[in-house]
Image (cartoon, rainbow, N blue to C red; front, side):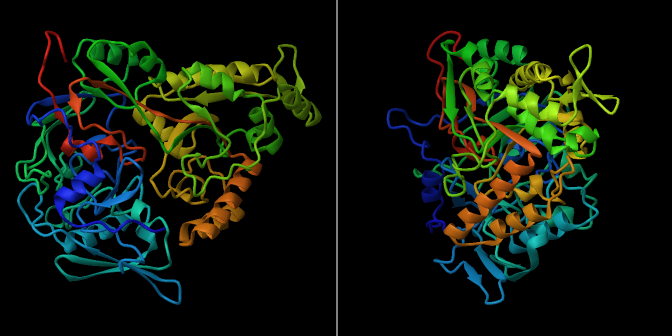
Length: 541
């Protein structure tokens, strides 16, 4: 996949990566504290170990490149995004790929140590280490070796071509070699107080309550006028898992930014004085997963097809305030280069769902719940506690499946417990969400050995389709491979894609420069350019 070759000047990078940086009618006002409301607890501040979106981490650590608001990669610690056209990518006749990054000069870690190519190589070594229990090692296994001919040059040698190279290992952040070499990354103090090259530094982390970030006074980046970034003095992340409490704090002006708020809360906040509802695209989707490690009935493809035909996506859309859109594939339509609009989908048809179960020998018992071989079709369904939109969708699905003779009981779990259930497959059915990078790697979710495939689904045929997709560099073959992947998932139904998520965010009307990021890098990849306009009226947040 080709990327634009950008100039290395920091000011040009800033204006392209964050198109809403400058406001023609207002002069930037540096300083101030932005309070952010997060709806989930934080397990760690190590970007490679967290099971959640790295909102905090994205403001502290930086990668070599990052996706912008249009999901296109732009240079960060590298001076340009490598492409075949600019000579940054070289493909060998035997299929190997060599990617060269030229690093920015003068960048320093937040403790003052110089950032060099050795840090990039160390990051690969640390993440791929089997002893490190990383949440994601995406991309690390594809690399054969890394050369560092000088302090500002990195040559990454891949075992094979990788179309998604920019979205994996070196995008989320580089680790400081001088601080972590020889350390146990599973238990190092870095995990609660990471040192990065980014615009903000961790001052305090109180688990379950808050994280305080202070401005990095020696940050390398400047705006087009030559002013050093970031503009804000401080960002305070408050952990507010209850949506009612979050809404109260937003209305009171105590929260200046609440990313990815529930759809129902967004409807309630519309028209609230001092608050804006900012919508943006997302590469995420909502889905119902089946655990292949649990009840045998859920490994029956007839059962999964019946469940798929019992769910009315239009009701889910209405219940979510009309914000999301119904989808037919795990590839969301926003990814136009990969999405197959012709992928088969089982339409809502509860009568057909009942016929499928009747023919398969699942007979209704006296209470209306079906039974076969003495086993009732009674399962648990898990959603994340506090994610009100998901809990509402869960209740709708419970009612719809009851209508075809399947009993579901909610078995919801809070943040870290939900994550553990998802990744271990300790559930029957799970309603959840995934969001991908700009160049998605679906094998992490559905590959036989995918790190996020807790459900235990395995298909050599799908593995091969995803392997082709993730190694092919040319657009048309990639489209065909993506279509094959989507067709296999539609046939096997290990997951039922339901809704394409929409980024819905509540901000203070004083917050400037904020642009939602549609990828899994989170909005905070652009936090260096946010600023707060002066208070203009009593009570303004």
